[in-house]
Image (cartoon, rainbow, N blue to C red; front, top):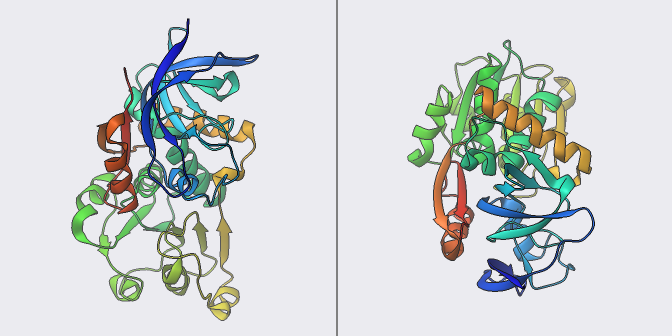
Length: 317
């Protein structure tokens, strides 16, 4: 018997995905079928749509790099194994996934939280712990603090005992940033950043999801031996670095890109994120949940940077 599933597929690079009922192929060796409940949207999905990531992969294919649902009677997160990049992903009622891409969801973690945890949670854990080494002595500035990763970074830094400031372009996300634990919230452009933090002790760590002029401005603010962790370029892919400031203050600039992580690191990051969600140190607010048929509206919210937290698709049949 042929199984069919509603899915959002990329048919042409640069065009919105098309929602249609498609045939679900039979799983092969090492694969399982996951009945999905929720799937998350990420900036990576927009890069796939634009063709700047996996532009040569076959089309049509289902988008979505992470989600949560049920497999063999247990709740799971599904992420990795090329899902949503080079093979069919999670923006569907069901997905055929490599078994190694499944991570059990701990009791006590809601499926909406689980569906939000893999990409954002792994990124936040890697940049704050592995790279930023944040502890209670740090003063942290989070650029782009109202995004999903920014809010997660705030929660983890606060759990570590650090003082945290959150930057946002306007007042629209200030409430969510403050609720995550940032104090103060800075509504500042790159040009206003120095004035916004004037009079306060220099930050020891900056988490930079913006790039562009923000990177140079943030380096000017960092304390001696401070570190800047870059994991995005929402404000622009190019920045002019003040080299004398960089070497005279002994600053460190470190980049993180989750796409290049090996499979075992992707899986371990998801496991860490789910444990942190369970103990409350990682909080990823959900901005909105829309039905799969409204994937276009969900993408507009994401690309217009209107979401304070994660945007999810309800993909249940």
